[in-house]
Amino acid sequence: MKAARRHAGGVTLIEALVVLALLAILAALAAPALGQMVAQQRLQTTAAELAGALALTRSEAIKQGQRMVLCRAGPEPPPNQRCATNSNAINAPAHQWTAGWLLFADLNGNAQREDGETLLRVGSAAPMGVLVRGNAPVARYVSYMPKGHTLLVTGAFQAGTLTLCRAGLSPSPAVQIVISRNGRPRQQQAVVANCV
Figure 1 (cartoon, one colour):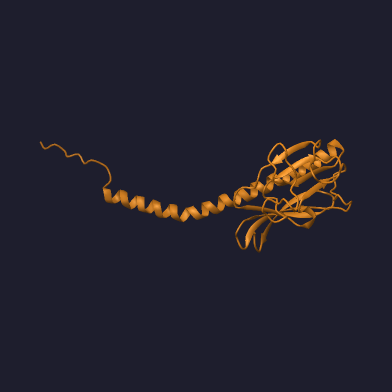
Figure 2: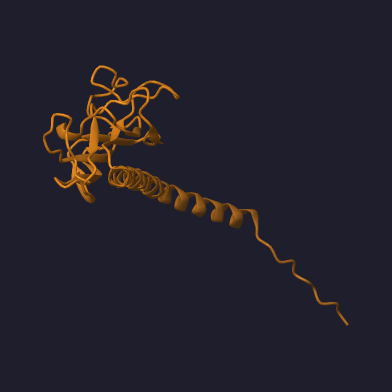
């Protein structure tokens, strides 16, 4: 009686190389899409954080019964954090909020954080590849009054748009945070012609 031959299961070197080549091709095709998804998620997360900071600023103004300001961060390191001015814009155009933000009680109503004004929150810089900019009314700060509406330090009402986009893309997907006359921020999807 002949013994049955056992055939060892397995793959040949050529079969393994073919499978690896197919996996490499699939990974190369998926990588750009994954990169786009990660960049879009960074944009959405940054927009949600900034919109949340605006809502918190409004809430604190109502709760504490005093002017609260959310301003773009200046170059000073902690603990001497100040709002950016047009002269210390951290090598960025004066309208950019990309370096982060400060939330504080503005006791003297000048939209600049000074000694004795309580710093409630500090927002970190936007992630690499995300640009945050405000149009003229909200280029430096958003100031909420005790009734929840926004007001410039000059006494004029304040309404504006903060635009977050993916730096370097033309056109670029964007998220806009629109601050209405009554101070309520809302988000909307947009496309901007150039994100610089």
